[in-house]
Structure formats: structure tokens, C-alpha cells
Length: 213
Image (cartoon, rainbow, N blue to C red; front, side):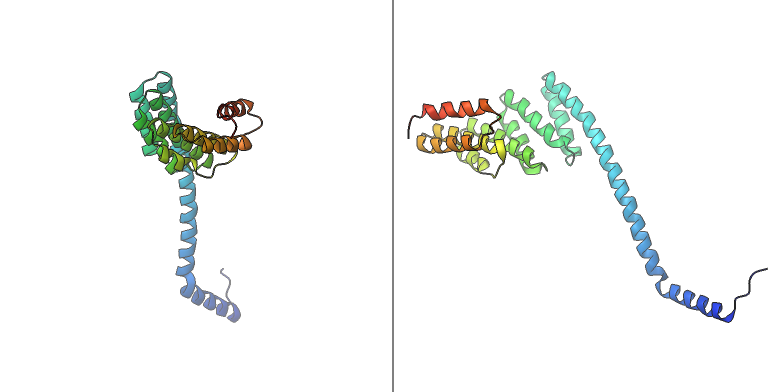
């Protein structure tokens, strides 16, 4: 037999029902929003994992195409990664790799486009700086010295900063500015990693070749 509620319990039930009538919809809305948020977060993580897995498979195709020097497959695989999976870590790597293949083939236009994509879109600062250095080399080959200098003026760190200064020195040499080249090469030596003696030796030889200031 069901328990009979006394007067006090009946009043509490009445208050609970009244409170729920006033706030129940709002509470359900909040709970629903939380559940949807959790489901969305888990769904996004699943989506990212699937995208990363698919991008990894296409990147393997790109690596194989690169080894076989199959330019069409290189373009197809790199293009697919940049179009479908631009937010994955494979996208800037694919663009850098495709840029190198195009550069080696003498296709500076496509190499420049891929490197610019990395500069504009890569999330990793070091990858962006690597792309800037390579893009500067491409621009130097096209004698676009001012554009190359602008890229190299970016605030880079460590050995990449030393490499940027070294490239600036090369640009000054090509422009017939030995004094500016000396300053750039000295900056490169100051910033160079002591663990890379080969780089330091190359820069020092360039500096020595300019003679005393």
C-alpha cells in the first residue's frame, strides 16, 4: 500500500512542483546544451582523428610520388591534402615537399605558391620560418630582391635567424653592397648555433672574401 503523505510532505511536494514549473524548462535547456556540447566535442575529436588518418594516407602517396619523381601524382596528392585537410599537420609538410619537387624541376612559380601557402597557413612558427627562407631563395633566383628581404625581416629564432641573416648578406652581394653584406654576415655569425660549425665556416669564408671593412 502506498504511503500516505502527511500535511508537511504535501506542502513540500507542492513547492517542488511549483518550482519545477517555473524553472524546469530552463534546467532542461542547460542540461541539453551541456550534453550537446560534450557530444560535439567528442564528435570533433573523432572528426580530427579521421581527417589526420586520411591525410596520413595521402601523405604516404605523396612521399612515394616524390621518390618516383612523378610530378602529376605529387601535385594531385599535395593538392588533395591542402584542399581537404588544411588543418592537419600534414598540410604544411606536403606543401614544403611539393615546393621542393617543383623547385628541383625548375618550376619556380609553383614552388613559390606552395611555400607562400605555408607562410600564410602553417600553425607551427618554425615551419613558417623555414618556408620563408625557402621562399626567399626562390625570389632571389627570380631577382626579386626587395620581396626576399621583406620575408627575411621576419622575427625568427635561433639558427633560422642566422640563416636569414646569411641570405640577406647574399642579397647585398648581388646588389653590389659589400658594406651591408659584411654587417649581415656578422649578424649571421653572432646568431649561429655553435653546434653547426659547417654553417659558421661557410659564413666566415664569405666574410673573409669581402676583406676588411
